[in-house]
Length: 101
Image (cartoon, rainbow, N blue to C red; front, side, top):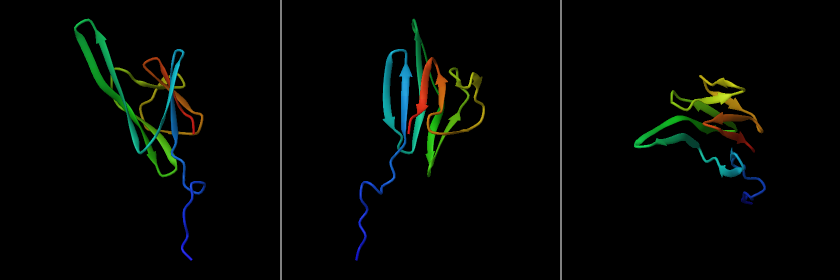
């Protein structure tokens, strides 16, 4: 007999929650998510990438990049890839980003 995968046996994709002040949103993490920023001050516009969140098999990593808006983890600037556990958070430009499951 052929086996059939069901929704209950399929692996759920991880979710990332973004909190900024009283605003919150959640996204499903497919394979990777670039952490981009855009800052406008008068006629000056700064854009860049502060890093990315990456899913590798059953693990979720944040990989910081050199940028004007650094990834902060436990109050320290992240300088190397960090393996996130469910519930872990980091900060980026005043926003708290959480691996919510």
